[in-house]
Image (cartoon, helix red, strand yellow):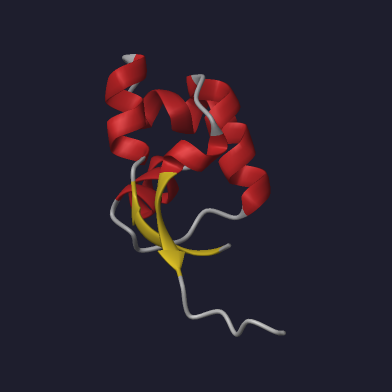
Length: 77
């Protein structure tokens, strides 16, 4: 099944972990603006960064975005 990315759930995952965007930026040696760009859906996290973020805050990488099933697949015989 194919998926499309919905909205970023990073802010929710940060709240659940008790961490802040500023903490995450420092932990990963990013500028805090970059983390806020992910939170505000101005930028999509590359997979390597999403894996690092998930590891830092203790969640599954798939929990960082809404995943919307895309049922427009062409099915063969």
